[in-house]
Length: 167
Image 1 (cartoon, rainbow, N blue to C red):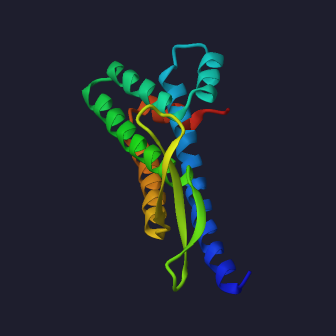
Image 2: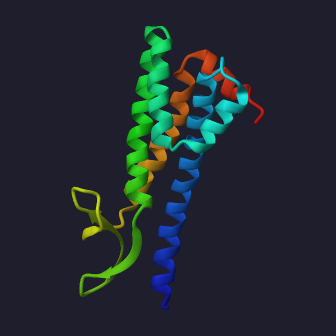
């Protein structure tokens, strides 16, 4: 492999790695916030569910839990859940593809390739692709950071529980 290839892919892999780390942090906060919403449930049940449920299910459960909080608290939870759902969808788009080099006949470009499922969710109907754009990763990382910062605006009972948890 030539130096251009190695250099190009080092940058792509570093960007993706940073995004994975940021998502991991946010996913941890989603799980812990879910556990905090179950404060009146046995600790073992909350821990088990937080580890077993997918992020989308945790977010749906948090949206339901929001109804137990006063108006402003409920609104802040719903807003945060919406922010996290949006990031989860972007995460799936960024992480659930294959990265490869694609030539335009002049130069090679890092590209992400997805298999698209048909309407019934069956085997891939066709391939979709998009050139790697570092700004998508940059925006995702900053979105995760903003969601982590927005966590502080949730009801204090949730925020304090997460801060003081010793899992």
